Length: 219
Image (cartoon, rainbow, N blue to C red; front, side):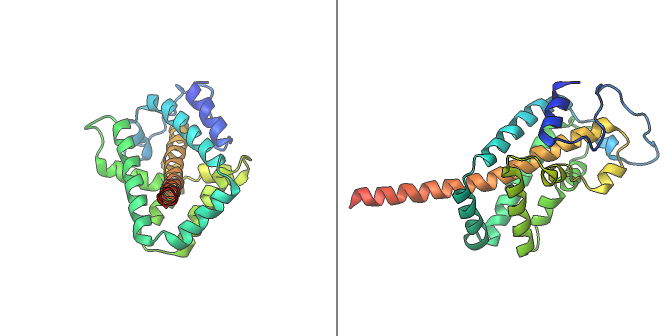
């Protein structure tokens, strides 16, 4: 079993898709007459996954290092102080960064960028939902995701969140190796955006604290 699969199994902590011990054992059940996600992932470079999984694990540890007070303050900030327009800007920026990473992971000129964009929106369907009409339910859902990821216990909610691939992705994929890749891609993107939101809040808090300290020193 390769390192990328071991890291993914440890990160996601599930065997829902029946991980293989040999990554080179591919299924040959593609229907040439239909467009599947296997067609897109055929052009994906899996060598990048080791680095992505390391980054994802590091981001997960950052979320788990949050103190209770910090998380409570983040919730207040997200619900009461951070307006909709700025939330949209943050989600848009981080989602575009995620797509840029995907573009670099696919063979140039062999896959249309619009297909990759659609693929990204399916992989991070819950984040894609955040980019659009505002609802308080979306705010609660996002906070709940961060809450799940910040726990040290990898419970069913944790596993379900990281493995939450839409049915259309799973049904249209005949290759279990590609399912593993999609799990890794989802974990990478989801942790990137959740961590970015928390780090944005922490930077604001740090700036406010520095301003208060500077103000005190000037008195």
